[in-house]
Every structure is written in structure tokens, then in C-alpha cells.
Amino acid sequence: MKKILLAAAVVAAMTMGACSGNDAAQKNEADIKAKIENCTNPDSMAVYIDQAKAYAQKLVQEGKVDEAKKYLDQLQPTVDKYAPSLSSTFTTVKDAIDKLPSAGEVKEAATDSLQNAAQNIKDAATDSLNAATDRAKDAANKAAADAADKAKNAVSNTADKAKDAIDNVLKR
Figure (cartoon, rainbow, N blue to C red):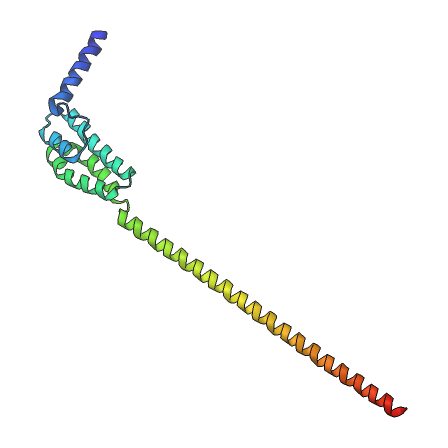
């Protein structure tokens, strides 16, 4: 049993080595493209395409959506030509990434959102200031009216007292 597993592992290692050499871990576009172009083993081809998809997904996770799209666009013709049976799975990933917003679109949406929020804050502050100003004017007008009424009443009371005093002096 151990010999069978060992033999299978050796065959798998040889199969992987037949197409990739020592650079199987590299995931940049040029290396993967070269690996796909030079590979004759379908299983290894699937591994390389999976590496390309994983690299593109890594770029997306890092926020580099535009780079991932460009990377997949550059690899698409090579995959179509050298691995047509795997092209549909590659295309599925490419289409999913194409639907993601680009960095520019995200930036634009964020900028618009911030501008709208800033305008809303400015409008709210202006409304609050106007309301406070109106309340202050109303309070000042009320205070002035109250003061005028009190002054008028004081003058009237003083006049009444003066009249009463004069009447009292004349009646004596």
C-alpha cells in the first residue's frame, strides 16, 4: 500500500515538474503565461489556471481591482488558445471580477458621498444658525416690546401720580 502511494506521489511530482520546473510558486503574469504556453499536461494546466485565478483574487482582496482585470485580460487569449477546455472557468472568474467596481469608481462614489455629507452638514448648520438667529431676534423684539410697555406704564403711572399730587395740592 505504501509503495502504491509513493509511486503515485512520484508520478504526480514528475507531472508537475514536466511543465513548471522550479518556478511553480511564482504567480506573476509572465511566468504563468509561459507555463500555460509550454505545458502539455492537462492536470498541470488546470493548476496553472487556478494559480492565475488565485493571484487575480489576491489582487482583488488587496483592493487592486483594476490590476486584476488587466492581469486576466492579458492571460485570456493564452488560456483560450492553450487550454480551451478550461477557458470557461477562467472566463467565469474574469467576468465576476469585471463586475466589481474599479478603484476610480469607488473613489468617485466615496467623493460624491463625502460631498453630499458635507453639504448636508453645511445645510443643517445654516438652518440651525438661521433658527437661532430668528429665536434671538424674536427674544430681542419681545424684550424691547416688554421694556417699551414697562416704560409706557411707568410714565403713565408717574403722570397719574403727578396728577394726583397736583389735585391734592389744589384741593387743599
